[in-house]
Length: 160
Image (tube, rainbow, N blue to C red; front, side, top):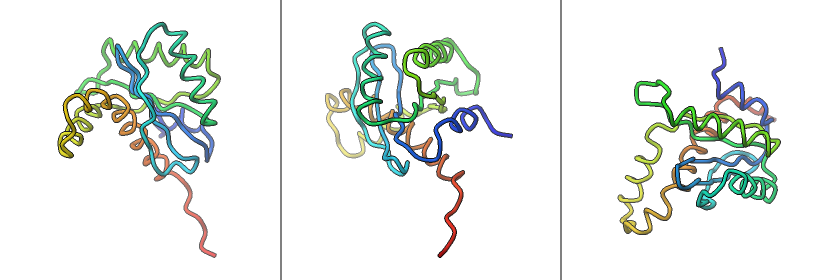
């Protein structure tokens, strides 16, 4: 049986750029991948203002990159349950889909920020640079996990 992510991801089609989003209270980290969905890279961090302005910026980025969908980090609790942040994220996804006509798939983001923080510390990134890059790095981690999962489900090419 397909899970929630796989069902939503079917709407992405076989190819096309995706935007990964790490939704925070004050910022939205954004990452992008190549149209073959092999590698996710950081794009930028949006300072959140009003939802309509945030959505307009995401629409602009999606258009600029010819994106076919969004992968939104979904903040489950460590026991897998959903709390207030998860409900807020679902509401953001619903509202975004009303403004930007692209599919949105939720990707379990547990520990994504922690993992990226550790990676940035390991490469001796200063605290100030870590703070500036953590959200888009977390979005990259989220998107890479999602495209790796999509890649595992991709049909293998026939040998010539």
